[in-house]
Length: 293
Image 1: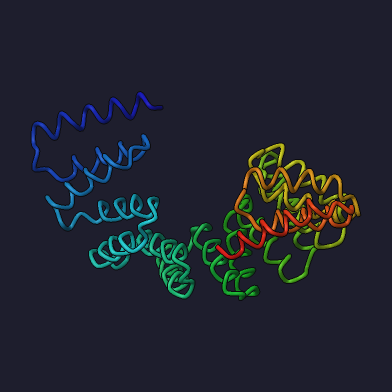
Image 2: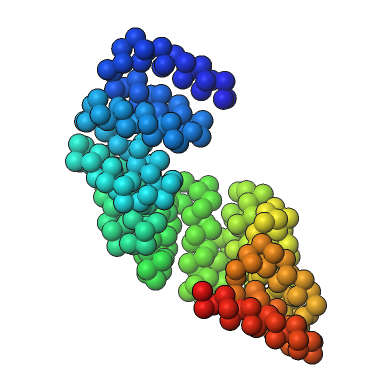
């Protein structure tokens, strides 16, 4: 696949050399660089394309994606806005702008942009899913579930919508609904660690620590660097009264997330329960220091 991008890049380079003032050639080479993972060169080519043709809508959208991936959400939004000004019916620009606002934590503007995108392109399940996540983050769980249902109706195998709807059900206290959605996600993709992790949370909150531990263990097997899975597995062992196993999992979580105060605090509680007061005192002190930073 990489060879294809290299050959494409060479062909575009020849075209640019032949006619260096043609913006589309810079744009296409930027796309090739982006697909190869070279955002820096992609950005340079998008800049050149826009300089040569300030009305090249797709160049703004793609440059916005680069800014977005670099965490420059305001610059991304500015580019998406420019694309919308050039083409007010560009659903993709609204969708991308919605995601950038979501990343900034501005859920109202995210929802507004996702809604515009859906009005323009009503058959894209990912847009309903993304708006559902924004509603969920605002605590509007019923609206979120409605969007996830629509996404699933459009694409019955849209795995993220099952996981996200399951999470919203869990927040509403509907653990059966949550477990059913996570189970469906696992059927669709048995190797998806997030599905096991989230099902583990549902089992934990429904006071079923054995099943929670089994799911967290599978999530860890699929994603050994998932420190939160170790942490929640530790909590599940605490629920069973097994402080020794909980300490092992909290310690693994701390190794992955050494600045997480909760890991130290809960490990300290386990040491305290075991009568190991000096170790507990050390962990509580560390947790306090981290929580003040």
